[in-house]
Figure 1: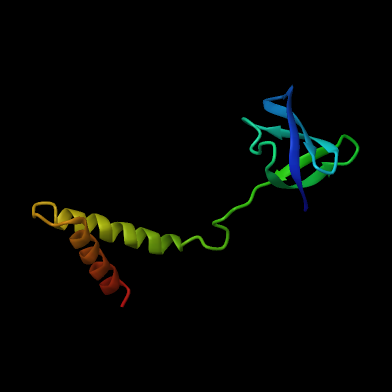
Figure 2: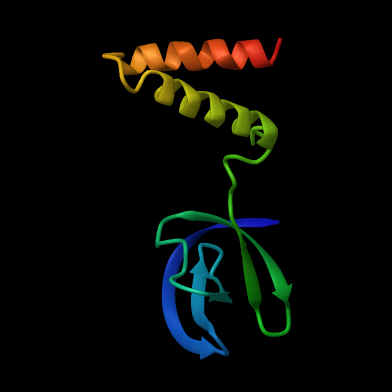
Length: 114
């Protein structure tokens, strides 16, 4: 993985169904990137990339994933959503506040996970 700062982005036509961009990085290296839509980085932004084709200077943008490694367990999320829904339905006919709904949902969640 390499890093750099974008100094210039020029749209350079299309290749098949992808947009082609010539991107200059602060090390004065110009690479070609392909994207389905607009290029994800702007001038002045840092980017992580790898070179996928040295001969034609083709790069691949490596996106930062702030959620990597922190994704909640899918089953846990399903249980939590179900508890919120059940609590909302339970409190629908009363004058309960959102805090009341959340307290009841937490009680249900705790009961399921004991």
